[in-house]
Length: 160
Image 1 (tube, rainbow, N blue to C red):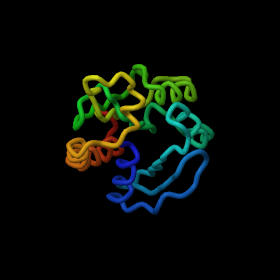
Image 2: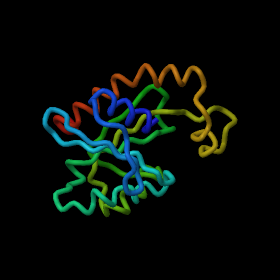
Image 3: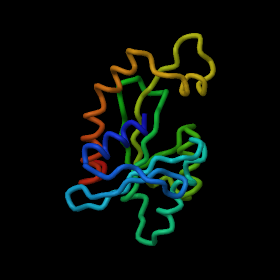
Image 4: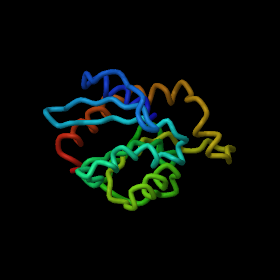
């Protein structure tokens, strides 16, 4: 889901195609004069923090103001999302990796619902890696314009 949103953002903002970066695919540009870099990690999800190496090397990088992490969240209903300025990993291994890399929980996160686990499914990893059902696909596609607007607002103003 996060990759779909990254692609939608790059398209809406008119950024160039993604290119190879350090442990991530990268596209850059500006939104209303604000420099923006969109990363799609090429690591496994539970090693997402490694994709932030180029950002951490920049002395002006401030995760609390400059980073928005987008993750799929099976604990939120499909077709919903939650934007927070900070918080815990909440059991999400990708966020745990990012927190370990940053040594901080001070960064914004956008959790996009893909849940709940269907009745009779015990393995959340199997569920998260499975393709969307037609209904889920429709819910995600309907939500995408709103998500693009939310991220665009975050770039301009941060989490309100």
